[in-house]
Image 1: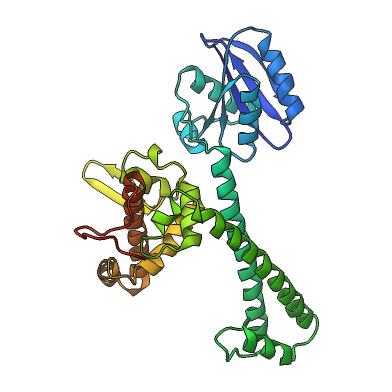
Image 2 (image 1 turned 90 degrees about the vertical axis):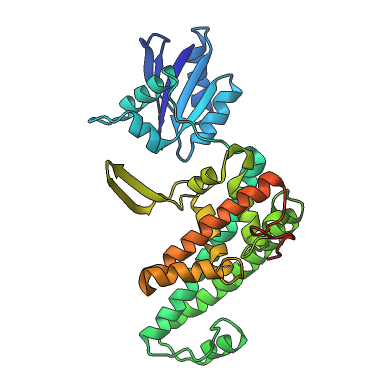
Length: 346
């Protein structure tokens, strides 16, 4: 078996080719495109042995993984943070990184990550694109609010972008170029509204046939948009052995530094997809008002005080939702609080 470490950058792919005994056969760099990968495969195939490669998780790593596996290689994508923890070095270059990955592959120590199949990747892209559009729309709305505040124009309506709000914006006198900025922002918001509605129609149609979405919608705080997002980000629930594994994947657990009798809990780990954390926190905001979680939320918020308590309480409810989601999806059952005899609708 030959072992190849791959370090990807914008313009090149550094590689280090090692034998089973650790001796180096070749090192170099190729373009990180389809032709460059085919050339790399031909250079390595002359040795006539099976190839195992490792590359760090980053944008573009999945393309390298897919193309090389089509050419007969076995490729693992390594968790970048865990790989650095396994091999901390004082000197860091692209060549050294490629050698480190080759050594980890040779010693069977690659901290490989789970790779979603093309269907799950498509689901994630649909949900993430909708969120991307919504964030752009929110940024434009905030810009208009900031412009009005800069010129001392109060906002007497509850929704500045509803019918009454649009009429108010048309009547307000704001000097140029700020008037042009408001008009252009309103046009962009209207266009984004149409794009978001189109995405939501697609998600609603696809979510109706999804294995997980109907179950997720039975939990408090989860409607079809959040349900589709959570289902896409979780992927195959069978890869999580326990509820705690799923909670750890969400990144909503605090960092722990423990030594002897000293036990310090820090900020959230924030591992795993940020979109999954966003969806669970959004669901927790609404779930905190449900009879199932209201008392727990209020108790935590009161105990920690007004400033910090509500944030911590929302994260706590999000973790409880993650645990409930694991049981729901592994057992293929709707949400039901402990001790309930019938499922509780959202």
